[in-house]
Length: 452
Ligand SMILES: Cc1cc2nc3c(=O)[nH]c(=O)nc-3n(C[C@H](O)[C@H](O)[C@H](O)COP(=O)(O)OP(=O)(O)OC[C@H]3O[C@@H](n4cnc5c(N)ncnc54)[C@H](O)[C@@H]3O)c2cc1C
Ligand SMILES: NC(=O)c1ccc[n+]([C@@H]2O[C@H](COP(=O)([O-])OP(=O)(O)OC[C@H]3O[C@@H](n4cnc5c(N)ncnc54)[C@H](OP(=O)(O)O)[C@@H]3O)[C@@H](O)[C@H]2O)c1
Figure (cartoon, rainbow, N blue to C red):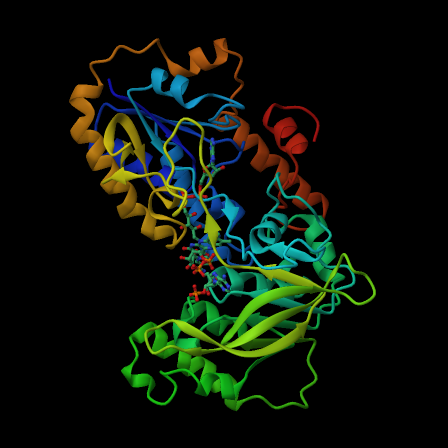
């Protein structure tokens, strides 16, 4: 019987488990995660107001409830928990689906000032990730700058403009809901270094900004006109053309006298060069300095030597995620991924038997949830080709029994269900539906039947 460990219960991990049980009638799969909760970024990244996408958790759940799949949460793979080498001894094969947990840096002066955060940190906070570092994003903030024009930038911009009526029905933690309800942010600038036709956001997500209550979206017409696709959008590929068309509508619509609670200003052709301290409090960010750019004719940009400052008490850097090395696995530091061949891990260019990768740690941090399904399938196809050789190795016994004997206390599926129950009860006590638990103590107490 083939025994496989999948490390990470995000989309790529769950799709790997699904592909394994669908293609091999005898395989047994343990899906391990460092968190006591499954689903990776579907639980801790997808914005709480995107309930339809969040409900994909129900599809992922059916895989984790399959009778040849076990969820083992609260098990950190790596030196602080279960080392990679030991994990490899317990299973015939291991598929690493650990995602890309950290943020890319801008590498410009002032990035460390108070009030400058990565979008990753902000998302973790409103998603109730138990490792979230702070809740001090919003006090004293009137104007925010979001750097980057990808879908995460759109998410965080939208969350800054959402009202309590729209957020209250979500599973957002109570503290984040209260902070957003009390927020005095009136203006958010979302800024791209290149032109609108090179923005990474998708049209559906962009359009949604224009539907937010009590909110006006504006686009600087001169910045739009700089875009090579502005004059003749019909020459652009479909997704870019649709983005440019939406943005053109907002440029035409920019009436200055509107009284609304939030103003979202979409800016382009501005490259961040420094975060500047506030005049009264030198440790805190007060503005972002940008260099105006122009298209270089090849899809890139050139600096113009002209600069512009945008005042901001909050800066969210949304310039992409980044994989982190896992001790014991090879790592390509340039791309933040594990080197592989069709999902087989490469150690110094040579296939490492029994080690595989899927998802963001394999491809890099781009792609929607569905992109991980074919990615996982490719990896599982490689694994099952290798399986006849791998399965010859004798294992020390049921991995769960061995883990327990070695002092690990995994959160099993019943533990996760207890967390779900505790979150439903918390929601009911607050007059809301489900409300997420946001700290390790509460999650583990709920999972292990203790007091929340
Ligand atoms: C903020 C944000 C919002 C998004 N919103 C959408 C959206 O609305 N729609 C959409 O289609 N796509 C969205 N995406 C993209 C989508 O979330 C990703 O494509 C997908 O989650 C990548 O899956 P993954 O399994 O590779 O990684 P992840 O989902 O990150 O899962 C990785 C898992 O590995 C676990 N792990 C990490 N290290 C270890 C370790 N050492 N030991 C044990 N476990 C470990 C983590 O706890 C996590 O559960 C969003 C992405 C982000 C960042
Ligand atoms: N609703 C959804 O479907 C949804 C929601 C969230 C996320 N996602 C997906 O998750 C993935 C990750 O999204 P993401 O937004 O983190 O990444 P992304 O799509 O790669 O966007 C990153 C943005 O950061 C900019 N950037 C990078 N380095 C920069 C720098 N030094 N200075 C200024 N700007 C810089 C990029 O500009 P350049 O293009 O110029 O490099 C780009 O605008 C994407 O595939 C996304 O579609 C999907």
